[in-house]
Length: 69
Image (cartoon, rainbow, N blue to C red; front, top):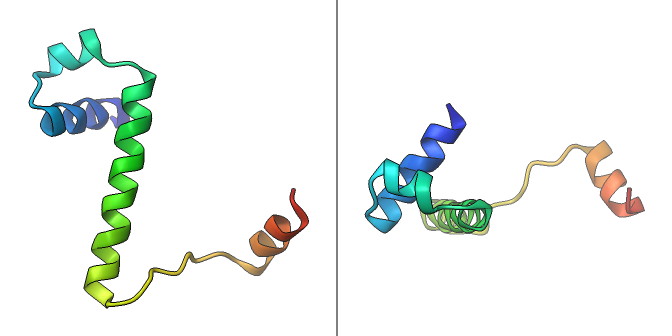
């Protein structure tokens, strides 16, 4: 199901039919789509709350990040 949604999202963003996306898109297009959607979601959350969204990490995750693992 994820692949179908990715094809749909790329098609909407660039005005392509799904068959065109399947023929022409590659992993770089998926990378750009993911980055663009993440950036949009970040700014949507920021505008809704009026402040920077804070990631919801557990204490264990933060320690792991801090240690570089």
